[in-house]
Length: 160
Image 1 (cartoon, rainbow, N blue to C red):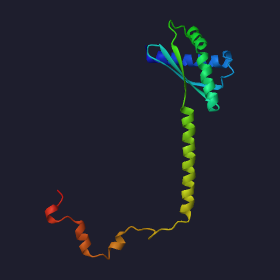
Image 2: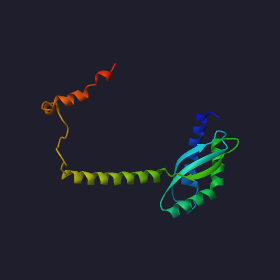
Image 3: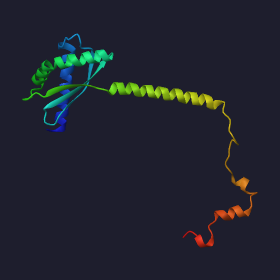
Image 4: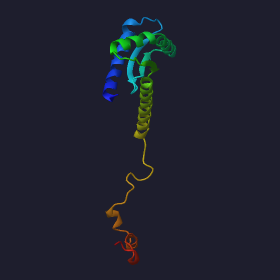
């Protein structure tokens, strides 16, 4: 199957499932669910629907159970609205992306806090030696000619 057509079909499946969860499925175990994505195999045999649930781990587990019990009703509606000869089997998968994003935000906040602490400590810091430890040409004027000759290659090792 054409990849563009499969993507359109997956988008349509996502819409149908979201509408079903919002309007027709009245299971009390169903929490605050958001359908984030849907993907379908090239042979149109299997569709994977990704979702997130706002709430605790217990609410996620209850929502997963509710989705599994309503899978048949949702699949029949997907078949009716897509007009496919063979309706794909549906698999519901909890989308870990929002949890990963939340974890990344926490890591960024911790890094910003550590950076602020280091910047606070750096305000009162002093150099261990000179503020500018590098040598300049004015400083080399008083040096002996022996050091300059070490920088030049010897007669036997001249660059070509």
